[in-house]
Length: 71
Image 1 (cartoon, one colour):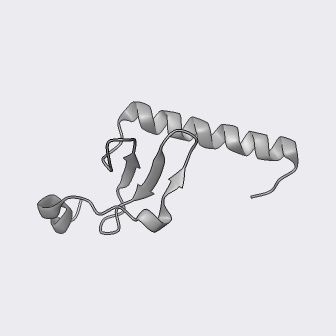
Image 2: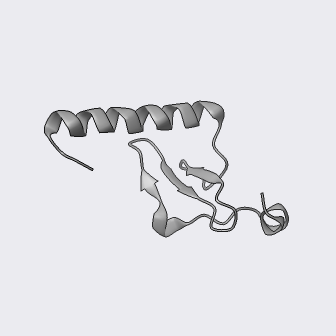
Image 3: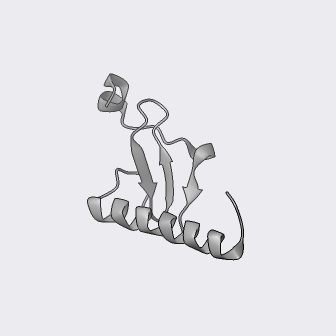
């Protein structure tokens, strides 16, 4: 975590945010830390949220493959 993030907090890259079927995900523009935005606003994700996010990404890849869509 960078000094500015320690002082001011993380700054979400809103233009780079992507929805995983449950929440929006992006990175901090200052330090690259992963951020999640449920209904309450941008924050650091919990371990459980990260695991769910990885699962959503894997399932989406499987569905794309079954549909013949390459990403």
